[in-house]
Amino acid sequence: MTKINQDVSDITSTLDDVVHQRTRLGILTVLHEANKVEFGYLQEALGLTGGNLSQHLSVLEKSALIRIEKGYEGRRARTWVSNTRAGTKALRAEVTALKALVARLEF
Amino acid sequence: MGSSTEEFLASVGSLRHRVRNDRHSFWFPLVVFGLITLLSIPLYYAWPVHLSDMHCHYYANGSSTCSGTIFSHSGLLTPGFSTNQLGNWLSLFWVASMFLGYLATIAFYRHRAVTVGLKVRIWPAVAVGLGLLIFVMLMQAYWHTVEPSFLNSGDFWARGTATLVILSVGIVTLAVLERSFLYLIYALGFVFIALVSTLYNVSNLVQWEGLGRFITPRNEMIPNVILSSLYLLIGGFVFWALQHDARVTDDAVGIVEE
Image (cartoon, rainbow over all chains, first blue to last red; front, side, top):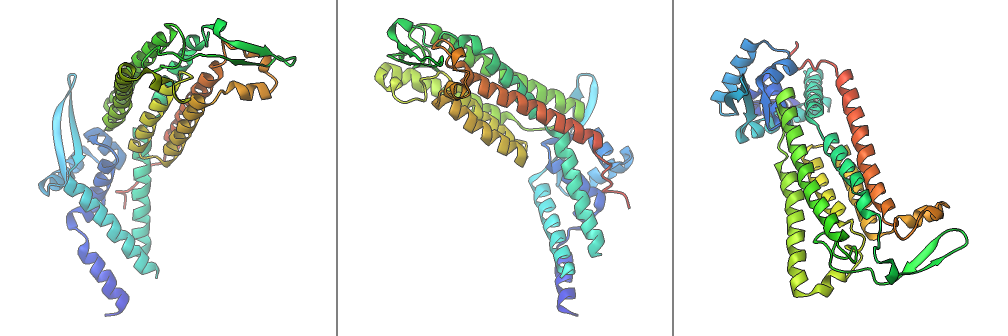
């Protein structure tokens, strides 16, 4: 195994399977930019169906990377989603690893 | 792999950009506080009030210089501002309008959170802005009882515009919370403008431009207030226009598209 291949292998081994998935990384990215994000906004921003988004949110919630709060705004039911500390940390680690990967491959 | 990872990182970047643009409401407090500052102008007319204490010399080109004692202890936010009750009214105006301005800002951010679907934390900016205001008033009240002459020292309180500096700290905090480098640069610019409005007679600049004949001791402080007000209002309208433009031209992010 060459040095570059070894480096790439080291970096990819740090990637978290839960976070590395494109949609889930997108969800964590959106959540990182606001305190709380409404389900509808996430759905529209990421171009997902309600069912698809719910599945990904459930995976992230099980891993304690996000928090989901359900409530009412007037008569309208609202679901607000936010990052946990672990979620923010996981997002940072993922983006750092991806940047390192790009840097290695550009070399 | 490298190319697709790069593209993926780029799409993460554009997603962040889009969300930030959607959540920004920075223009609103700028317009609100700009209008409040504009509304304060009538209270700055008649500065200094006791013209009899002043000795003015009027020059042929229309400019004038005045000297005399203008300091007293009128108003907690304007201790050196005037020799009668006008300073109290001005202080009352600033306290009431700062509270109302921050309340309007909270209400607007809440409204945006519900309509857009993004909640932003702005309480630290409100706490810093109003906390500093209350702290300054308490300090002034304390020093007023202990050593009144302390209030007369320095230029900071003399023009009755020190509240603008307090406001600028709140605006900087809000810019930090909005996570925008452009907003932060603008907010730091407002700190400078507020300090100029507080420590310098902007009317001097007006006199250099040959408009000195319009400046009298009674309206000498108004250019200071107009300067800060215009900076806030223009900033508010420019940021609103930029944000509106970005929303219209924002392309689909496509982070989840393969």
